[in-house]
Length: 127
Picture 1 (tube, rainbow, N blue to C red):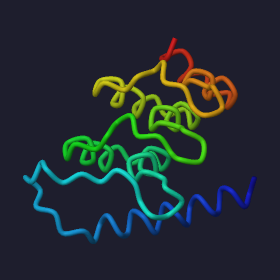
Picture 2 (cartoon, one colour):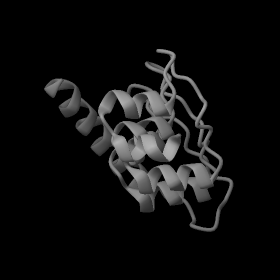
Picture 3 (cartoon, rainbow, N blue to C red):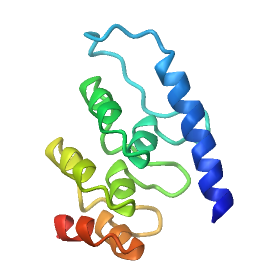
């Protein structure tokens, strides 16, 4: 589990560094970033897992796919927010059309990830 957390942290740091260095004009709504070449995890999902509301808002404003799923486990950004009990992130994602009934490759919804993680506040919001 520790190795997974460290690996995820490294991937997130590398990805967000790449995104921060991208030269996209702030008013260009055509820019879309959906997946990285690092383990095929969407930058949006990484920002959600890092509880970075500001970056998530930017990705949404640039048209990022709010339902993008990771190739490995099929988790959506909402599932990551639920897993980490991030109520503010869940509200933001739901307000922008996230599907709380979406199912991962394991057959779990965001509510199930919240339940498995003991994320009671997230679970209450998703019910």
